[in-house]
Length: 296
Image (cartoon, rainbow, N blue to C red; front, side, top):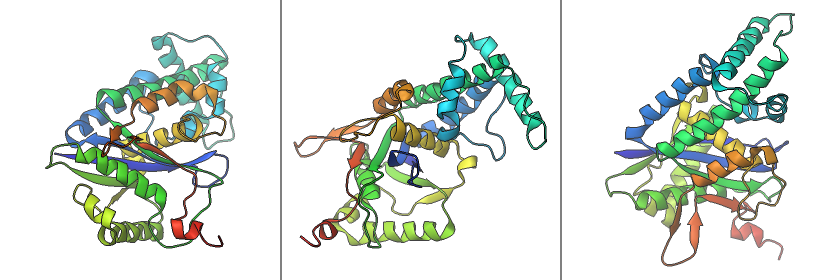
């Protein structure tokens, strides 16, 4: 038995997002397939069809953008069966118009139903996370936080792996943790592998944590990996809706319900009788101590 940490990020382009978030969802291997099947079956329940075939995937910025909530609020909430029928019609009309000069002929009711279905579907995914004992890990960095200059594993990765190790350290001794990333550009993948290797081999904390966390990550295509897509949704909700610790930037109030569900998936621990450590870490400065002390 082992645990898998599926990871993705949000806001790393430092454009609109108030926070840069590195997030992961942790699930035991024996639960993973049932979790995936439940999500895929739910697509038909909420939309009348699969919405992630081929190259399509669940993306927080597509399912939870402000327009989705604006459309969903145009009309009163539909009953499930009617909402699914209308959302399906909207998707069919959108697919028919895609790539051609015609615009979608979706009606106001269909657009409203699709918006409502997207929000309800994401909430259902987070409910499934709870049912399958998923735990959320994340590092949250303010968009204006100072950045490091050195070629080493960034603090947001180190903090997240620290909390992942704490979680694993409380499981059975034979249970190890694997890390699965959304594939980056090949050069960036090599850089991350090298940095993780040095961290887990050359630092005292890293060597200790390598006893439970397999130091070499796996890389997958997100559109082929449902759990990475869920991590993307968690990262997006965390950046725009979750407000814990020192997160002072305004949150999108329409995401409050989803943000609460993400917070319910956090892991917490008390190590060596010290204060409670939560699995969502807020970091205001990514620089190591020696860089922060330069010029003082």
